[in-house]
Amino acid sequence: MKPELTIPEAAKELGLSVSRVRTLVALKRIPTRRVGPLRVIKATDLQAFQGTRVTQAGRPRKDANDDD
Image 1 (cartoon, rainbow, N blue to C red):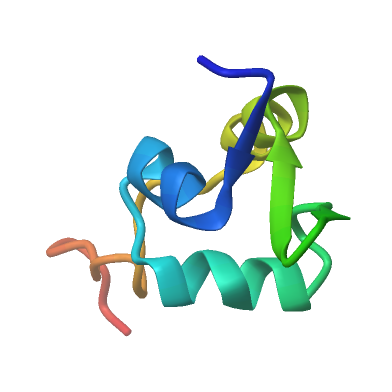
Image 2 (tube, rainbow, N blue to C red):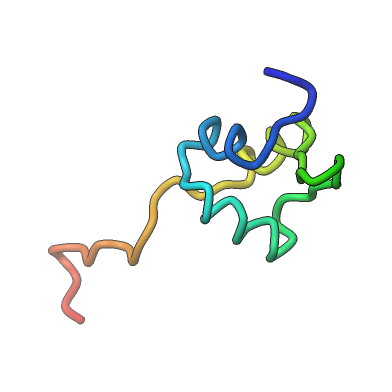
């Protein structure tokens, strides 16, 4: 992995859309810095984000044995 990635490169690495990565940047979940007209993400920051990511989206499934 390169030491710094652009947002499209980070999206590909994470398996997310570019717009989702931009949203995460706007929410300050992934730090970036400006290099000319681009925003770049340090590879170490991207790896740190990957370590905190929840991989299963959505509401938990209701257990068949629950009476609720």
